[in-house]
Each structure stands twice: as structure tokens, then as C-alpha cells.
Image (cartoon, rainbow over all chains, first blue to last red; front, side, top):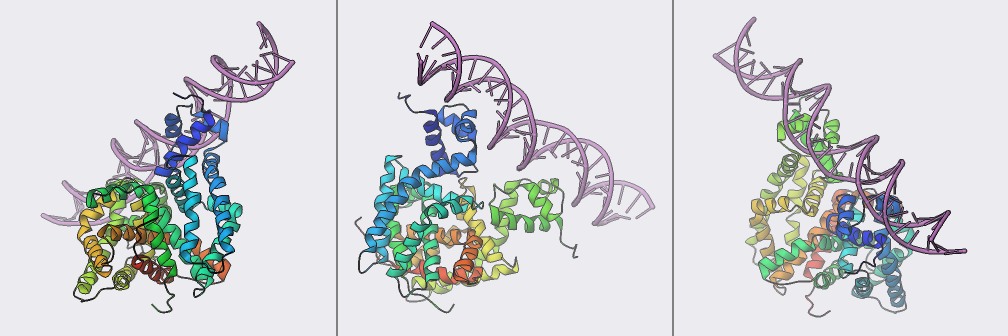
Length: 213
Length: 213
DNA sequence: CGATAAATTAAACACATGTTTAAAATTGGT
DNA sequence: ACCAATTTTAAACATGTGTTTAATTTATCG
């Protein structure tokens, strides 16, 4: 038994697992502190509030993922020709790196983003936009370069469709994995899902624009 | 003032609006009954429990949408050649018909499905599967027919990606509409979003399969 | 009309939540 | 080893939740 982990980290570890599985609002501090084997009050002592804990959990991942993604995107920017597929491939390695935080890090992070995005109090999204808005902007620019036939607005919308498909797949990945196991007798890892997802979202983004209904 | 609406319907109307905007668990019976101008206890009197109210709200839409979709799919089944795009176009009219329940019916229904799907207690999804499983099966079959190059499992996964992109777009449609208004000075209705979505999901589904990472 | 059923209401219930308090335990530096 | 600062702890707090109760009002119909 390694009791070396600080109370603060024990809370972060327990919280991120529960948040990723059940969402932020539906996870209580009592669940978290019970899983972490720490006292209830220690959350407010170390983080101040539940909201601050949520931000801390997300920040631990974003501070690793976002710079890595940005580096990949920068690298791609120097290419003369850019395909949608290349843009999305930039996500793969930064996402994989998150296993250094947690074994299921990539899936956890995407779930966290999904819940953060879904929760109406757009505070978290606005925070992400302010903090990493330039990364998002670079992403949109690249996708537009890869799809000059589209308007900037179409790229905007399709990017959010991509986000929806991604986070949704991750949030409900456990249930879907069970169904796939039952129906197709196939074992798919969280990473396999990404592999299935990327052709899908690339194909969606590359689809031709339509003017009429 | 039309006070003709029954208490039961007043509750349903207020509940579906709040559910669609904030989700099921995050909407309290006190919010619902306050919006509906009825007494708190009347929910349990008329529906028995909050869970039963949720099912009643969903059922009101599903009982209209699902048979209409099934009819469209049946109709398509007689065609010799089937494209992904044709399959998704089957959703359009049944979804539009939901305005007869509520002016924002289409968007509300998709939001409800999104929340129902996301909430871990898969009771609701299982209920939908049991009740309308044959519609889903027909849908998968058609999509597989439209994409014989894919495995049945790939169709399964891509269909869920489609679901994710769709419900996510609807759930966060309000926020995205505001952003689009600010960034592109464009007014997009909930229906416009569907028009932007369909080429995307059709393109994603038609994308070629990939074997390697 | 009057009796019976249905519906509405205000109040309380039991429980879960995030947060705060104040005392106890532990740690770190000299 | 000791004092001061930090951390941990148990308990209570205030508030919000779904549900139930029992009384009252309203509607139904012979």
C-alpha cells in the first residue's frame, strides 16, 4: 500500500473518476471523499469549494493536453496542403499522453469536457475559451484551410458536431462497449473508439456544403 | 387567458421545457410546479413520481415520432438502391411534425433524448429499446444496406456518433446560436441546424473504413 | 339538492447536499 | 524537545430535494 499520495491528490484522483462517470453535479463530495479515504471537510480546506475542485480536475488535464495539441497544430501549419484528416490526427498523440495522469486519462478527459460543455452554467466553457481560445482558433483556421469550399460558419458548426460526437461517444462509451460486446462479441477499448471515430468525423467535415433543404 | 388546460397538461408542458433545457435530474419538481402554476403535490398525485413524469414527457413525443419515422423507413425499404442521405432524410418530416406538440417540439425532443441517453441509469434507454427496438433495427439495417462496405459493427458505432453529434448540437444549440450570431452575425434556427447537420452525419457515415491506426 | 368521488392544497417528513466550525492531531523548523 | 503552523477530524449548519399526509375544495352524478 502506497500511502505517499497527498490528501489533495487523493481527492483529485477520486474526483476525476467519479466526475468522468457521472458528471459534476451528480457527484457528491461525500462520494468523492469516501472513495479517496479522506475527510469530507478536506475538500473545502484544500480547494475552497466544489466548483474550484472541478476546475482543478479539468486544469490538470488541460494544462497537459492543450499545449501538446497546440504544438502539433503549429507543426501542421507549415504544410502547404492540409487535409481534415491530418488536423484530427493531431489530437491522437496529445490525447494518448494523458495516460501519464491516469491509465484511463484520454477517456476521462473527453468525458470531463463533455460534462463541462453540457452543463448550462457556461462558466467552464468560457474559462476554456479564455484560457485556450487561441488553440481553438488555430484549429478552426486549419479546418477551414483543409476545406476551402466551406464557409467559416460551416466549419464552426461542423466542428461542434465533431465535438458532440466525440464527447457523447466517450461519455456513453461504457454502455456502448457492453452493447457491442453483447451484439457483436467484440472487445473495443477506449482507444479503439477513437480509431472508429476519426474517419467518421473527418468524413463529416469533408462533406460538401448544401444550400437547400 | 386560457385556463382550459388541465393540471396534468400544465405539468407536462412546464416539465418538458425545463427538462429540455437543464436535464432531468437538475430540474426540481418545485421549479416545474412553479412554472406550471400548480401545487407541488399534484405531480405525485397525477404521475406518481418524478421518474414517471419523465417517462410521460418522453412518451408524449416518442408515441408521435417513432411511428412516423417507422413509416418513412418502411417506405424507403422498397427502394432498390439506398443512400445514407436518404435514410437521414427520413427523420426530417417526423421531427417537424413535433411542432404539433410544442412550437419548439423538434429541438425539445432531441434534447430530451440526449439527456435520457446520457443519464447513466439506462432505464430510459432500455425502455426506448424495448418499446421501439424494431425501429432502431430497421434503421441499422438500412444504413448497412446503404454502406455495404462497412461491417455491421462499424454501422453500429457510427450511428451512435451520429446520435452524439445530433443531441449535442441540440442540447447546446442555444449557446451555439448565440456564438454564431456574435461571430458571424447570422441567425440560425433550430431547423437550420438540422440542415447543417445532415450533410455532416451523412458524410461521416459514408466515410471509408480504416484498418490501421 | 346531497352524497360520493376526484382534485387541490398547505404542511410536514425524511433525507441528501455543500459548507462551516472548533477542537484535535500532525507536521516542520529551530 | 518544543512551539507554531499546518492539516485532519467529527459534528453541526443551512438549504434543497422528492414524497407523504390529512384537510379542504371542487367536480360528478343519481
